[in-house]
Length: 391
Image (tube, rainbow, N blue to C red; front, side, top):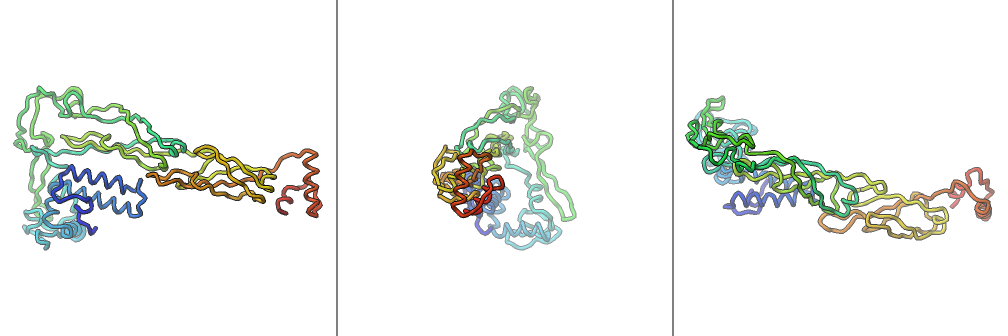
């Protein structure tokens, strides 16, 4: 990960959190492994996610800006391996009360992510010290036919979805409730504790458990949501399925997940697409495969035959002398490729159908055909097999 986090997301160093989130969503749309054809999509997606995680955390971002890209990564690496950590100048901080990038003393530590969480907690802080939290992503599954995957469609799905309580606006208390400053945290919404550990003194800041990080206590609780600020109901959402979607791919619908807490943004809805098997076509990436029957005379003399496709019937030429099991390629008659870049191909395998019974006239004609080739035949003993082998 040699690129600067700001460069990875294509933003300026003074970008707002909203700009960072927008840039990350754009990166997800472009590089998510489920939708991208880029051979390096998975790695690019991971680096964009890492950049977003650091730059949307106020304390981590300050540390990143102070240390620089390489020293920040080195601090993480050291913290996860040998228990050391880089100081503001890039050096290591020793045990006891030595300083480090976090200020205050502590020796080495194990997982740097755990240390970030212990010092700074999750989410980002609001004006009164309480932390906003983005809503969780919701997941659902949608099953469609292969024809729907070929054409693309809009589909309405009904999902159980938590929503902001309409009575209290997500606050958890009615508007007329009396408020008082939380005596536990003196209105700051968080408490700081200093603990002595095997690694030295550690300072931990966490949301106040009494006021749940709000800094304020209320004498009433919303009767509709029970103080959660969230109600659960079934919601109808339109899902746009693009032409060419593959089985197992996931569509992300922004902002249709669970609502955030204390003004945080909504999560997303992830819709996993399942495509049913088709009775006539087998899908192979963007290509389709099918089988079609032809008669013995069509195989011998050649013919123009009609074959079904997902876009309607088409004709193709079967040349004289075609063998049973031979495969023909119909260009552009397969599945549409995502993002409108043409279609795959249709591969049609022909099967020569042998009649189960013959009329007297047919029998005589075939016997004459075989005799003309200098071969004695017995129609009742595998004539068609011997005839096919002689062609």
